[in-house]
Image (tube, rainbow, N blue to C red):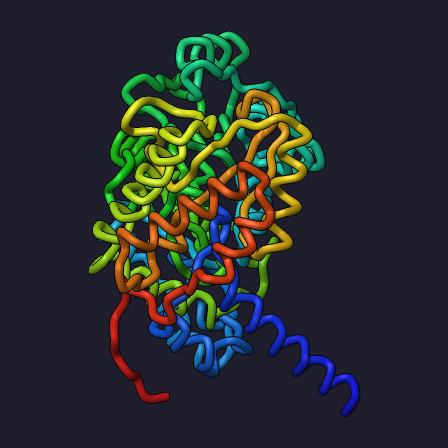
Length: 412
């Protein structure tokens, strides 16, 4: 054991060293606060609570579970405040576990589902999940010129084909939907995997589909560790009493017996943060993305997006050739810059995706100077100037502290 344990300690130390030197521009990760970590060290993790948020039965549960069930209720209340949801379910374990569990709970074999394609920015795993569940997939029409849903064609096909579900699951997104243009037939349920934008929705920086569709067929869900800076967990939101009951009574005990309660409580603490700081934090995310995007564009980088407001989210799309994309990605890995390479039509075939949700949470001593340094680093990276990139990264220092959180000490 000793040798194995020593190896672990070395790995942990090396990981910490690398993270201190890493410029985090991956759109899929974030930093969790010490405040939100408080419940992660509690006794909740190993404890069971069965049933749903609205269907608790003491006879199905162990001693102490009633207290855990009340945490579900607190999450429900907090989500009602910041998302405007009537039902909130945090039992699922991750973003992917969330969508698979949700689809297993509400769909039936051979149901028709319209699905955003990977080429238009949709999450690539959705196709495999839907096929494995025996759903009949119809590709969602997409307007590549405006990089958004092709609203007219979507409605036309939904109505003509009598499609029960539309699953909009953007992994890559710079333009959020205009819900005033998204018309759904009465029998179609809008499923929005908002993993990338949950924080932006509760921070009121992008439109909330729960407000648009109100009590109609709309379910918003996703992972809680991207623009919502919480633990890796799943969250399901709806204002439909019908779908709330279906989800509540089906997920447990059929598909999930043991939720990770320490994660759920940690998410609750993140929701407290977002109630207090969410609007300022998410506004800063989008502001930083546009500052960086515009400065890159002014220096000749092919940034995809409009003039002025390049993106309405945390993401930036950089168009490149296939060869340059690979070189840039390898250089980024070598010099500790997290980002994603993309080969899909949404990026005009090849490109790089950046995200600002993590750097926006950092407590920069001089934010303007920090952004200038980040832009200079990216310009050197996209120019594939390794010598300059190495020099700039060696002189770059990340803040130790984060902001948009509570500076409190809570006793264990």
